[in-house]
Amino acid sequence: MSEQNSFDIVVVGGGPAGIMAAQHASKNGKSVCLIDRKEKIGYPVRCGEGIGLKGFGISNSIRDEWIRCRVNTLELFAPSGKSVSIRNGFNGFVVDRIKMETDMTNEAVQDGTCFIAGTEVTDAFANKNIYSCVTSKGTFTCKCLILADGIESRIARNFGWKTALSLNDIHTCATAVVSNIAIKDDSCALYLGQKKAPGGFIWIFPRSDTSANIGLGISGKYSTPGKPMELLNNFLSAHFPKATITEVHAGGVPMGRWVRPLVKDGVMLVGDAARQMNCLNGAGINYSLFAGKAAGIIAAQSINGDTCNHKILKRYEKIWAREFGKQQERSYALKEAMIHFTDDFMNEMADSILMQKEGKMSLMKLFLKAFSSKPFLMYKVYKLFSS
Amino acid sequence: MKIIVSSEFCDMCGTFITVCQRNAISMHNDSVFIDQKRCVYCKHCINVCPVAALKIDKQSGE
Image 1 (spheres, rainbow over the protein chains, first blue to last red):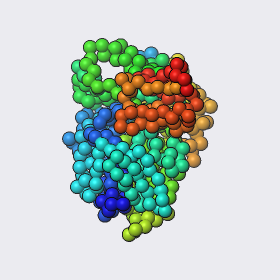
Image 2 (image 1 turned 180 degrees about the vertical axis):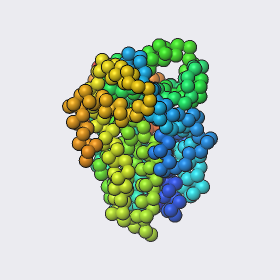
Image 3 (image 1 turned 45 degrees about the horizontal axis):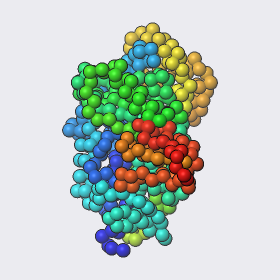
């Protein structure tokens, strides 16, 4: 084994979770290798690029050059087309993910990370507490392996995790970059409806006042071949018939609970690979940044000379559970409840909200309103919120 | 019978791999491999594909 391919920590996958893990492990003095399948960082973007301000601030500081738009309003469209406007419903940004991830990767490299792009890990295995990742550029070994290989989470399967998702716990998506449209650049929109997007929703995140990331996700259990792309095309031709569509991509968003355990011996799961996202809206960037940072710091702390203390690694799971674990459980319960909402019910809900006085309507109030007329759903989520 | 992927439509998003309970699908160097011995034809991969890039080839002798 060549010395050059031997590291304290190897991170597989260079998305937000993997980059954060690599950077923070490097900052804490360990030798780190970050391996990413893609040649070009961040591309293609299979994402709405929306980030909540509060969650982002916990892990990183946002830079002006990463921001496409600042958003302060969420418009929820009922199946009937009536909309409910929630001010401060989404206080955040639409970011340029490629720019953000490129800058973050460059910083990780400055901090000492060895970054290997365009290289796929084809196999991974453990041998006496040394982990090996096989690639076309040789085998990379480490004492601690951080898996951030995205929604597929395939490498975790080599270490006994069952990361395959049920159809209920995945959204299958189609996304488009759309220009030549007229929209508000401080407002994002979600369209609900079992016909428009069964078990999911359509999102519009502004890139400017003339362009947007528009996408659609539907529950895997309602999907038929090609349905997401077909429904997105239907939506675009109905709402933005004159738009120019510059990029179209397919994608999946995990909507399941986080993988347990998050750590096995010297292997840690982070980001989409660990199913760390908000199960209600699929937002995952903030969760990934937080988990990646925590995993990177803990991994660095666990390594002392030639050994990795696996007990220390387990702290990462505790930190995650404390910060976001319960929040994610709640979002899962709400997602499970929402799948029962019929179009008629969503329309009624929108009507009753619109009859109320203008003013601040928080997301929580909206859900309470919804659940108050569906006591069985209320009960289902009650325990989570009360415990 | 076997499941085949049309590389012309496939966007390599990996969604179909994620739902494979049999761990039968892998993707290397922009090519998709389906282990036909592991596959139980549950069709989850076919149904979740956002761009309808997968289909069952009934003509195949396997």
